[in-house]
Length: 625
Image: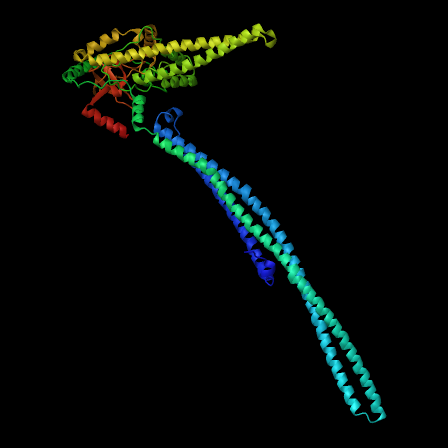
């Protein structure tokens, strides 16, 4: 059904003005709504991105790529970050395509509406002016008609009373006045007719020409405003629908990541990561405490004899005591090795073809630097003695299984580097051949430095590969020896445990230089360096006050054999009984003594300690202090 505001609402100018004003207010309010929604989308995207960054796994990439649940969570966070990107794009589209366009259109609409209603007010003022003119001519015509009627009435009355000459003259004057009034009324009538015709013409033009045109323009403006709101709503929905496929793909990817979690694979991966390769320990053996009683008697007699022959001398270094210095020099400042689960993890020796582990700074060299340097340098030497060496290159500080996996990973990486270097070398050789065949393309001699560099890099990588392969063969042989020794039974071990003193001495005497490996995987110095250190230590005896050896505070039994290769460590065999001189201070090492002559540190996790009752109270009181 057709509708025309000019014909249907010809008398509703004020209501149309109010309605169009309310329509523009609605348009502004809708624009503000879209802007606030875009701000919310932008803030939501920012918070989602911040959340994804906050909960991104902080562990290394190796750990992240190891477990399926970690990979699934990382994939979820990536998809969540993609969702935030889509929300940002939606906010940008809302601002650029809707908010800006509606703001511009609102200003144009206000200007157009102002022009249309100004035209309507001018037309209204014109018709009102024509009406006022008509009313004025009408009142003037009415007044003139009444005055002419009164003048005619007076003239007629004077004519009736015309008796004298003076009355006749008055009658003549009255007739003239009545005639003038009648002429004025006739002129007023003509003016009134003219004004009436003009008003009717203006009114017809106003209501049938001007008002329909103006109102039609206002109606078109209102329809365009409503259509623009419709387009804005469609654009808003279309902008959100545009990101829905990407959002749907992100959600599908999240679902796929969740479905890709495999608990059984993750549990197997834990075994691969933390498996040490050691075997479970054997049965606990009988502990002979009578040997401890006999040893205690011999220790007390030895201490009495040593106390009688003790010498005194002046102090050279009043800032440090002898036993503390020797403890610092001889105490292993390395983390203790983890307790092996195999009965004899320390009995294996390095294979002849295995490369030597990374050597550490000789203890004698540190001692020489300590004696010949100033106080500041002495502190630095003491700090270096306390820190110890770094992790060995052959990964011998790791458990067997972990060492094998570490070496295998390193070999794979080296093979990849070798492959890349070979490809680069082949490319350079082909380029040199092309240059030799076509000299105009380049100088073949300019490639020689690069070829030599690649050749040296290949040689280094191949040497490193051979070294790591030798270490891997050694680790595999140790693992096989462990398993075969575990399967062969513990008869030999039991017989060895019955005579701990002799077996330990024999093991120490028969130890080869290749088996002089410390708990951290490094090598100690040769016998000449040890003798030199002992001689230097004997020279220091005259410079420090001799103190009585520390009393025994209990006994301990070795649970596993240990090869003490570092300075200050003591070797022991499985089942050996030793005297405890100093309890573990928290660094994982316990100070023990054997036969009143050999003293050193052993890993606390390798022994089982039995403290005396009096010693327990002393240790507890010292800890409280």
